[in-house]
Image (cartoon, rainbow, N blue to C red; front, top):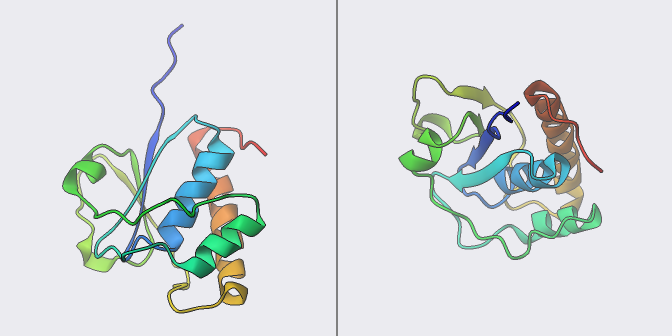
Length: 139
């Protein structure tokens, strides 16, 4: 019996400095390598939002070494599921891909207190995504 290929998920937001980084980090942690994970931004920032790095550190996930990446057509084409988080019309649409638009507050310019509820909502949505993909969430 052959294993089915790992599903590939791309998280996209404008700056790839907050929401998409948190989504990718949670999927990488909770999916335990059973999904391919990418994140990108339509207009990437220079660095990941420090309040986002701190909020993720509080739940035991270190994203301090991540750097925002530019959204490319190749990244979208290589993904089974594309999750947009406020990138608007900048996200290219290809047939045969599953698109999910997660409406979330933007953590840009916010302190860690404002980032925590966004982080927690993203974690819950990622857990639901894993269920939809047939992947049991790890610890």
